[in-house]
Image (cartoon, rainbow, N blue to C red; front, side, top):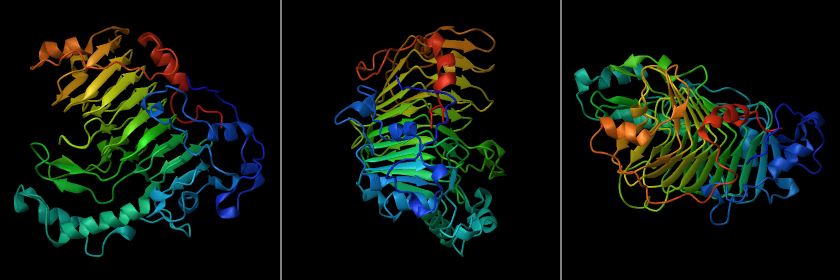
Length: 447
């Protein structure tokens, strides 16, 4: 079990720490507790990220590879100096984040806008007029305006997608926030990310997909955090939110709400051996996609992920949505509400979910039968889960039996594997809401 101390703030000088930008004051230097947490490795057997060599992040960093950063420029410098190539920087490094790092900040401190990143030939009003289905039809946009939109996306990606290399620990000091950026862990093994508030990675240039669903959909490019083609990644004690810019507040175009966010934490493109622990996912639409395609190929035998002691609060879908992987989901608290709620756990192609001792609080209008969704999968193992519908208290319930009672075909009851990588005891589901309220999310570590 991860050690947690609530409400502790210790200040001491960190000997030998390199301060990114070279302009931090001594009062910003780190406590001995922060030094210890920065070098902390994933505990033995703590989920899939403990498999193979385990996950140590930047624990082996030399003194000159320990940084405190407070801006996008300082963060990019600490990660290697060039955002375009930092994903290949395998030097062990520990990066402490203080304050708010905003993805739209220029090196000179200027806050860029969507207009600054837009291609000169892109105009949203003209885009709407050109690709209105009543005019364009139900075919994908193409031509100069769509090309200009894509170039605009390239501009935003270069600015707001922050690339992380292997052997890295990123840990937030109290109140640390990543705002309006995507933390991208792509082809980067052995990464630890802890104690950060991820806030509003919005897309300036959403794509219109007229054949996505019956009525089409707007789709966004950016997750708050994305793990791709990487192994041994530990995501711990973070909070993921859209803040005061939820998709529910966006305007409607072409009869569909403009969606400016994608996932909170997506794990895709053959990634595997990931542990997601003690995080809070707050009021989002799409939360966690594990596997991005139904194509049988490289993802087979990959996408093995553990989720434990997380809170899913007011989220609508993908909690998670699972393809291919053996995904262990235990001791999580689901607080589900909203007229637009779709499902909690999506059982996708060749997915093998194992759901144990989770607690579900359901607002009126949401039933136990709504918690699973068949995305082309066939099986799910579930046991020890408790559900509270409406004002009723928590009580034991079978998610699988409830689903099968109202859906055809039935999902099978044996995912074909039993988790062995668990650190500490599995709590009874009835204890999960109180325990996760005290321990999950950013700000619960003593830094």
